[in-house]
Amino acid sequence: MNLIITHLLSVVQYQNQLIRFLVLFIAKFIPIGQWAHDDVHSPKYQKFKTDKLPIIQTFVKQDWQFLLAFYEWKYKKKMRPVQRRN
Image (tube, rainbow, N blue to C red; front, side):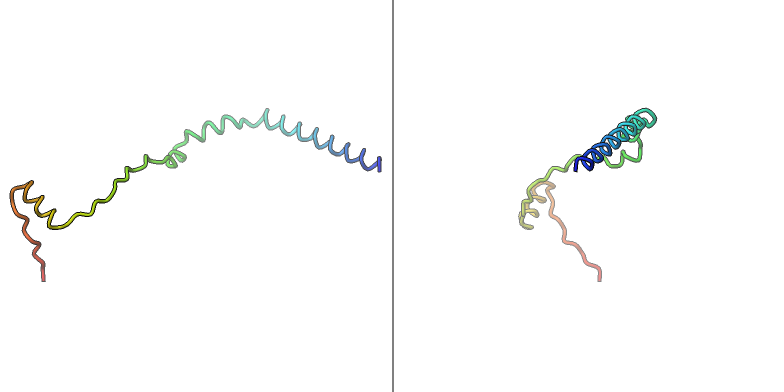
């Protein structure tokens, strides 16, 4: 039983050394921070910016007779009816 535990511990220590080596290698030779900075200012990512949200106004239902009276009051002339084409 002790032999299995010591073997597993040695495997874990070897994996730990390997992970440390790979992280150090990545940190030295792959400039991750520079790539991230360049991607943010790239034009292809600028299209993902969102616009401001529109102002939502409540809908007020109005009567057509009221609208005709308002138009006549505002412009001082009556609105002619629409002539349909047949």
